[in-house]
Length: 182
Image (cartoon, rainbow, N blue to C red):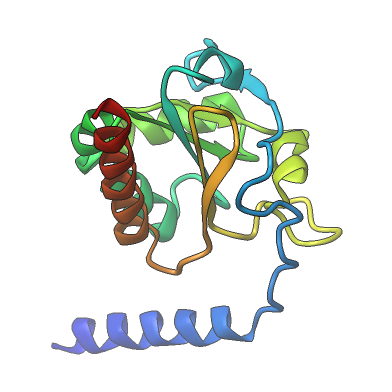
């Protein structure tokens, strides 16, 4: 009982601390704009390139602050748990953080992450998408971009509950896919 109370106090303190952080700058991108091209290497050293998917699949690019954190683990696990639905909707999922490949490899193994995580150690991808706070070296925001078949941004998700929002994105894509096939 005492441990549970202690855990609740820690979680409450963490929520209060997060609420006190300065809010991140708005991303410079908007729905309808052409998504910036990017490529990188995933946790296994394989090259991943956005242009490979343009015209073939929708792409969900989600930025997360760090590997092996409560929020990062929850988000990655939620996406992995729903990966089948994303694939069915024609959505390729890719995560981006400023962590290195070794850290990401450990993270994917520990949490059974079933999609590529790109190591953006120089923060070039994050900067192109406006995914970090001004002057900060870490990706302090959880933000996702759904990129359409034409390479344009269809949706931007800045939700504190990214998994449910991302699932809504997959449903929206499935509906678009059905309309396109009619």
